[in-house]
Picture (cartoon, rainbow, N blue to C red):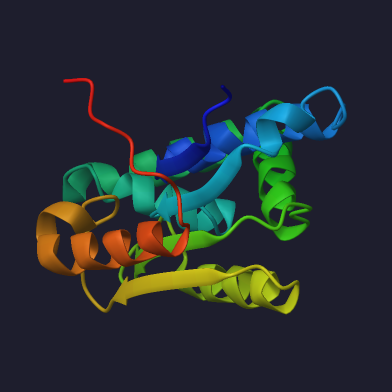
Length: 176
């Protein structure tokens, strides 16, 4: 029996999943049995926005004294290796913008995240809704990139459970 699949990607995990979808899109018929089993997709702090915002977000991980250097180094890296980095990132984002699959989705994100641009997330959600995709979202004014579950456990879990219930997937028993 082929079990249904649920995607739950945090941060750069959304990029990893999109790379898989880029590969699948090149031979959709071969992977139809995989995509047909995906019943829901959950994105927590999906990395999206400009390369400049990404560099800014990455630099904030470091001490104030190193932020300028890290930001410059990141932008230099993206510029020098654009064909190996930025082009892949843009192809990954295009998969989201041109999503051919009508799979219900849930997005978690916040307004103060420099790596997940909330305005871009808002635009993507509206784009999907206009295509007829069922989308739920939970946003916070202030939270932490890929740390919403830890910072807002009750709201996160309530929203997650409501989304999972909307999918009408048979409940699976834990193997642990």
